[in-house]
Length: 328
Image 1 (cartoon, rainbow, N blue to C red):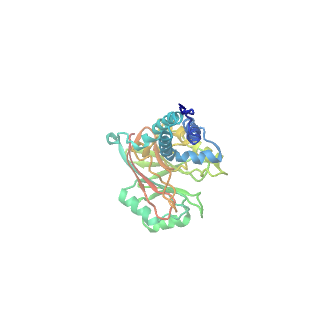
Image 2: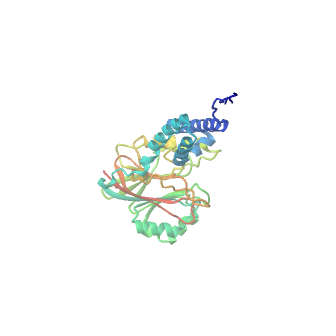
Image 3: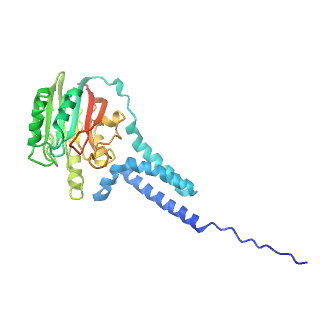
């Protein structure tokens, strides 16, 4: 009697599954490298400086990659992506969590900052915002002579009669500040690198407050070193003298190391402190706004109780309003 013998071949992992796991691990390593750049503040050059602006979106992509790694059952990729997701959550999520601003006390100071897109921002909208929000100090970037005339015609000087303006005929260079209370221009505080950045002291009831209009150049390929110098040379937070407010288009997000170093001198970002740090302000053109590069930052003697990000027709930026409380 003949017996058929069944020869069993050794079970082999399918080549396609192996390559999927290897690919998942390789992509996870790339995510880890990107996270290390952000953690270490290692961004430099024309590629990484713009890319680090999108760290919050990188975090969303990391979550999706974690799910993909789990689907292909790559233990190495899952382990790496879990570490990446924890790090990115630690970096990004605090900006969406308010920091107990209800208990803030001090003199009220309402600040509005807006980039006018080379004088194209709608003047009547600016004046309406100043009136509706009861603004005390208005910081404007990319102010032109023609736009200054339109703002005056719309009634801005009736609401904010004091001004220090440095407009230009066209382009992004001009800046200015308007206020409800008398202003005194200060010089010699720092050497601006970029566009006009006037410094003023506003004689508010209870004591003066110093305001710096911020607008370094954008970090496009030809100006990355100038951009870094422009943010890096902004004056550090003081502990004595008049409380200092920096307001404007920083062309930097909370993920840029040079901006974080500035905050590390003693400043607080008003939007992040009120849970609005992930609300984007730019661009406002053919695509929705993606990144938050407009800021109001305060030294340790001021605190934000509310921040609003507002549309401004004609501009490629959204306006930013901060309701502050200032202690003498």
